[in-house]
Amino acid sequence: MANYESKVMGDKLYHAQSEGYGASVELFGAMENGETPMSLLNIALAGCVTMCVQGYFKRQYGILQMPIEVHSTYNQTENCFAVGIDLEEGLSAEEKVAVLDYVNQQCRLKKMLRTDLTYDMTFGTLHSMVNERLKAYQKKWAYEKYLVMAHSQQHYNALRQLFKGNIWIPEKESEFHRLVQKALAISPTTKTIRTAYQHVWGYFKKVATTEELETYKDLEASLEAKGQEMHDFLRDMTAKYQPSYLLGCHLMELKRLL
Image 1 (tube, helix red, strand yellow):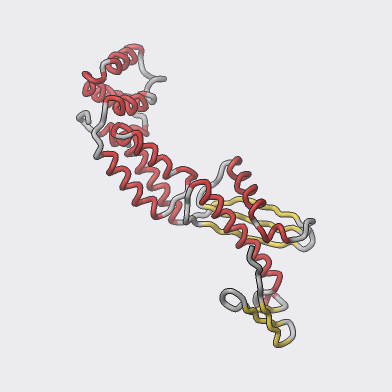
Image 2 (spheres, helix red, strand yellow):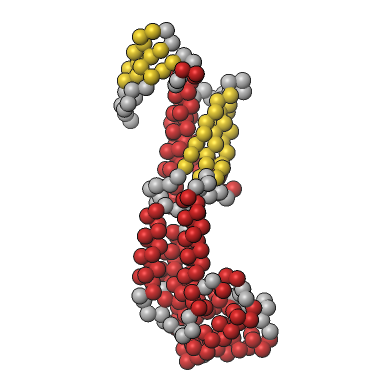
């Protein structure tokens, strides 16, 4: 493991200049004048936590770029660091525990500090255009998902993975369009169409009449020969029961079977 070396030169009372691996840092004895040794420690901890969180999402989801802000405050009275980790989307309770476990294992700086120090690490949410882009593409996915499923289960699964963890980056937008285009270029099969129609029927099974249920069963049993009839039937059911998700569904907008 590499050794870390720094050189600090003092020229007057409570003033110093560093030489290290990057840009020189000017240090003062009081925060109102600029960075102090304690503020640099705070920066170092926040930076280490930031990189550990990035490392977690790289290892778990293969994400190379993600917006994150980490805020660190040291309370000298309580010997406690309050560390806020802000991401684009909220995490589940299980994922928060997993991220914090990873930080505790990987943050070298934290391991070097006094053992009696405590750390209050919390999660928050960023509000930015990236979050709006995620929501926009979630809507696009809701529109295309059953049509994609009717063409290719493999591409459907790949597209679902793009949205896993609710983390969105610009590279995912081009990948989304590429996967949708690739999926729609594949000819549907009776199997893929059946899977898509089964998902669509799920919106009606609790509200359908006995007669409608029997009609569905009859069409589903003879789907290869009655595919267009099934498509028309599900479009009629959508018009009758008005499930909001299917009203904005590409598959149900088509008048003809694929």
